Structures are given as C-alpha cells and as structure tokens.
Amino acid sequence: MKRGFFWMVVMMGLVSSCVPPKKFQDLKAKQEQCEEERQRLLTENRRLTTDNEELNAQSAKLKREIDRMVDDTASIGKSYRTARADYDRLRAMNDELLAKQGALRQQGTEENRKLLETLQATQLDLQRREDELRKLEAELNRKKQNLDELSAALLAREARVKELEEIIAQKDEAVRDLKDRISAALLGFKDKGLTVEQKNGKIYVSLEAKLLFPSGSTVVNAEGKQALVDLANVIKDEQDITILVEGHTDTDPFNGKGAVKDNWDLSVMRATSVVRIMTEDGQVRPEMLTAAGRGEHIPVADNANREGKAKNRRIEIILTPNLDKLFEIINE
Figure 1 (cartoon, rainbow, N blue to C red):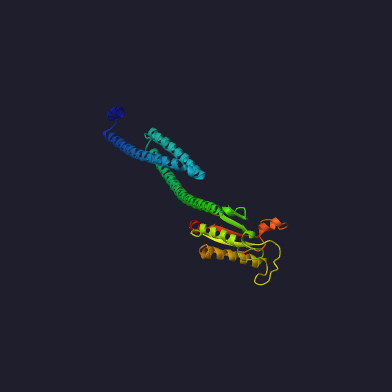
Figure 2 (figure 1 turned 90 degrees about the vertical axis):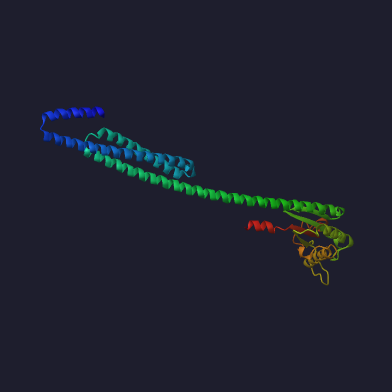
C-alpha cells in the first residue's frame, strides 16, 4: 500500500508538471474522493467480515448442539443436514464474494456497490438459514422433552410393576406358608379323603363326603368335625384371606324327604353345616366365610363308577388371599 502511495505521489508530481493547477486540483480531489470511498468500503467490508465470523462462530456452536440431538428423528436429521449443506454452500459463496471484492475493489464505485449488495443479500440469506437452524434446534429440544417425559412415565410404570410383583411374591409366599401349615395340621387325615392343593394363587382343601357325613346326611360326624376344627385353628387368625365353602354331590338323584329336596339342597346344607362348625367350634370369624352349593355340576371324576362318585361327593374349602392392595395399585 505504501508503495502504491509512493507511485501515486510521483504520478501526481509528474501530472502537476504537465497539467494546469486547476485540473490538477480536480484530479486530486477526485482521487481523494475515490480513496475515501475505498476506505469506507474497506471499513464496511471489515465490519461485515467480523459479523460473518461471529455468525460462523454461532453457527458452529449450533452445529455442535444439533449434532448431539440429531439422532432423535431421521426426518429432523435430514432437514438439518440439508440446512447445513445450504449454509456451507452460502458460506463458500460468501468467501468467494469476499475474495472477488478484494480483487475488484479498484474497479470503481459501481462495481463495489453491486458487490456490497450481493454481500448484504448473502448475509440476509445466512440469517434466514440461521433462523431455520434455530427452529430445528427448538424442534429437537421438544422431541427430547417428549422422550424424557416418556422415559419418566416408563420408569414410573416399571416401578409400579415391580411393586406389583413384590406384592404378588409376598402373597404367594404367604399362601405357600399357609398351605404348608394346613397340610401339617391335617396330616392325620391325608389317607381319609382329604387333600390340600395350591393352584391359581389359592388353597383348595378338599374333603370327601365320607370323611364328614353319613350317607345322605347334612350333619358332620365326629371325625369330620375334628378335621374342620384343626383346619379352623390354623386359619382363624389370618387377616388377609376369604374362605369359600362349596358343597358338591355326585349325579345320583337325591330322593329324600323333608327339608332336603335334591342335590342342590344337599350340597348347600352340607356347606352350611361346615361353616357353622368352623365359626362356632373353630372360632373363625363369620365375615371370612361364604357357604355355597354346587350340586353335581362341577365333578372332578367320572360319575360312571363308584370311585369317581366318591370323589365328586365332597366339600371344597377355598382360601383366597385378599388382593385389595394389589387392585389399588393397578387402579392408580
């Protein structure tokens, strides 16, 4: 630049020696005006370059942020990559324009004005692209928030499932323990038509009619009464079970007279007799018990032979754990 200024002074000296003073002054004034315009454009170019560098720095920061979140959705990632490609293209164009401005800044005010307009248009386009990037960033943040909310909901659901599993495990353990205690208490009746089973989360105590009742009777005999009292002693202090006493018969029609009309009546009255013994002699709380008669309609064996009929004539005592707490958690 200093070298150019030197030659300009030399030329001015030569011109001043060859042209009239007034024309020289006009040329000098025009030269100074051009120099001022050039300096202004240089200053504006530096400002725009600084702004462009700041925009580039901001864009780089946004890219780092977006890169961490771009995995959220393929569509948003694709949009970001397209926007980034456009931004890189515009940035390259901006660099090219800046280079052209440096090469052409000596070609006159009009050319510089056009270059400045193009540069300004490029800056506006860059701003628009930056706004698009910010919108994409906001969308990614919204998606991330949705994922966080879903993750929190999933964790809460998993916690509820774990709590349910723990309650079920506790209930199953309690049922197994109760079943073992019942089996131990009724061990002496094992070969007399009494079985204890655990299935579907319940305990089934089945007593064949021959252990409890004389043929056709609804009055429990002494041995059957002892079995029921032994059972009652195990379960009377339980707080979280309900007890269903079901009477069952075979398919042989009941032809008795008096209060018992048929197998329905027989099954109901036998269940009621068992309930009375368990409450009166066994001290089981009445609110824990329900008596029901099923007649001959739910057999466990074939009624075509004597052995099957003997198994079907039975009392089933079904102990069910209280699942209110489990249902409360499910309904939350």
